[in-house]
Length: 221
Ligand code: SF4
Ligand code: SF4
Image (tube, rainbow, N blue to C red; front, side):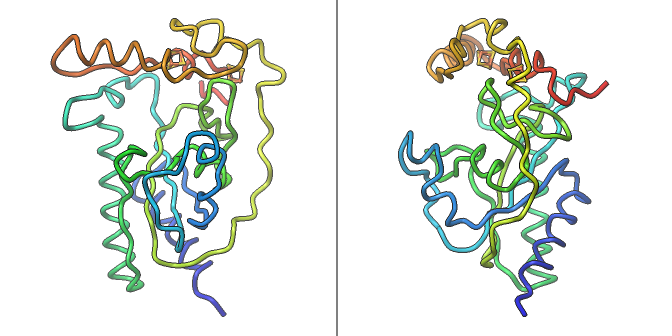
């Protein structure tokens, strides 16, 4: 009998123990033809054997510093996810003799389509705000992934219903860039604010979180 299901279950538990807020996995092959790949072209990461483990980290609205971007250092939240990945790589090697590696965040730097991976891993659904909405934390998470040299079957998890049908879309009406008009996400409009801030000042830059924080789905008190 294959050891993979138990090792992957243990890996997800280990990820939570190391500080991840949610964790799931998906066969790497499932990303080859994922919706973003069909819409925007192939992802940077081109290994389609093995398994992708997806980690999500809750970004508490009360701790905006987790999301402050810094040139050459990314954000504290992303650094926490990288640290968890490093520890998982070591643990998989030492405990199971299995190779694993951190996957870069950016698609054009060898990364994967992270939101697709999170959805395929059963962690959530894509909301009208173009974010992954999870039952545990709504859209208030950041994701990172790890490649594991072990084949797996697609996970069986209950379908997650979209909360957007019964919502009056504050994500769209409050977006300062009108980047969600008509329920269609405009990456160009969305990124223009961030790009302007990055080019206009030194030090840290805050991400726009309006559509994330306005979303009432699975909001924590
Ligand atoms: S604010 Fe409403 S419509 Fe927008 S993503 Fe959240 S639940 Fe969906
Ligand atoms: S991050 Fe900000 S600019 Fe981008 S879609 Fe959301 S609200 Fe609009």
